[in-house]
Length: 301
Image (cartoon, rainbow, N blue to C red):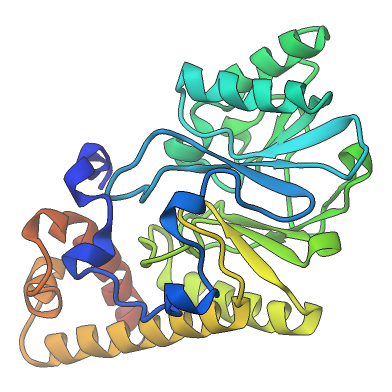
């Protein structure tokens, strides 16, 4: 899957016909324009776009700087790849605000979100003039942490006076987390929900469908105002976005099931039917997702 990540010609999957989510029209104001990704956000969250566009990362990884108005400390979510210029730019953006990085959080451990985290923590500590190791990196997976604290369901991050609540939302990966910023009505979804297109399911499809259903219910109950994704523009109609995601997954699952009933026996054979109109260079990523759907169907037998 990751060998596609350097293919800049494939960066916009929807333009190649692989955007099965019939997302809200960008002209409606419910979805931001691509040029607005860098610097977008809410009162407390600001995006710094990493320069790593690709088929898998869309316009690049969204690094989020989150802080309370007037606070001295910020939380940085998903520092991104190990790209020195990007990591330095995030540190400089925080310093230009007269603030310092107090904590780093990861939505999940994929390299485009996490590879630069430890280096970023070092740069942030040096910029603030505090000892190395003072800036912790918290994640669900211990392999991606810097410090002793992880992240689990129900945790509440209060660095710099913030209230940032942690929800476990597996499916895209087994360690995927979602962060709820109630003061802004903002849901930071990592790769569980993208700004456009659909995400690859690396974990179990059943887990992913449950996570989407949970987020849909949560967004409605909490009155969520916006989704701040790990890639792509923010989504200012969370309910509509989640309904499209759920509807698409159910539709795709039905197409895969029909392909199997018509004789397809492998993920590749299903892809050749269901994704026949998609650029074949994207088929390896499609196979990854289809395999998760086949596993799900077999589990239900």
